Length: 355
Image 1 (spheres, rainbow, N blue to C red):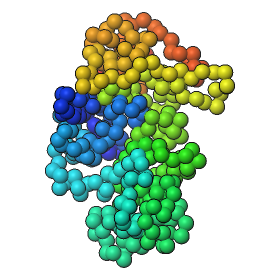
Image 2: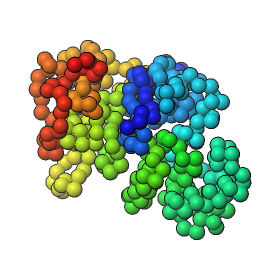
Image 3: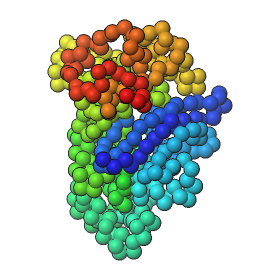
Image 4: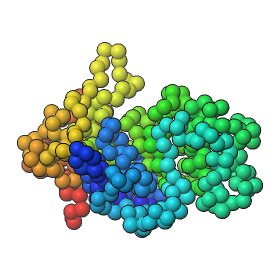
């Protein structure tokens, strides 16, 4: 597959009256052409900040990209000027924001909002842009698109507004589409329709998708690979099967244990992760998850763990994979769904280690 995006050692901070909030701390991940990468984690784990940094939408001040590279087709987005980023936003990299109720301009007809990126980035005439905008509304499944062009956002339901937002994001056939919890404000029926729509559209235009969510149930249906974030760091990355059937980080175990399934009966209790996410104004020493983990080792409170590689696609940031670490079993609810996965390595190795 062709590598579209490579995020390397990304650090993002916010300067506040209380001090520096280290919201993203050394994040690494990549995205290939046509694939869907899901980024999962609790609120405050750094998911949205990471992707807003990718779009260079972090307000400065108070926010700033302290360190790292964001290589898009070989170009480092960190070093681009604002004018150069304006040419990329909406054209090559688009974003669907969380709330469809506030993503659209309430004072503008939806047709004009759809035509805007086509005129700006594709240099279309108004007549061609209008024709394309009607096609986009039809593509995302809105009935009677010609008449809908002259309506305002308040005349649409929440699900319809989200379809319009998706149509705007896809207007210029972007190479990367960032979807920041696009179904959060929608009911479950509409959620399923929107997710199905995104999968269909991805096949048609071969856009790579970064899908941000806290819902692992959604991940299973849409993603090719998953990056699990906690405390501003990526703690585990793998294919969907590796994350669901061979998870190795205690935080991933906690997320899976708290997720209901079709096998969950009325008497079964979902396991909540104890405690709260770390205060990134004063990031904890060692493993950020140690204070909430029953599997924490002494070294977890003293030294940050390195990243270990279990397969060509599976990476875990945990001292539990160190050769000297004691063997521990994941919770029973996780063990029930685990199964042997193809593994190119006899044992975990440090990521990047030459074999």
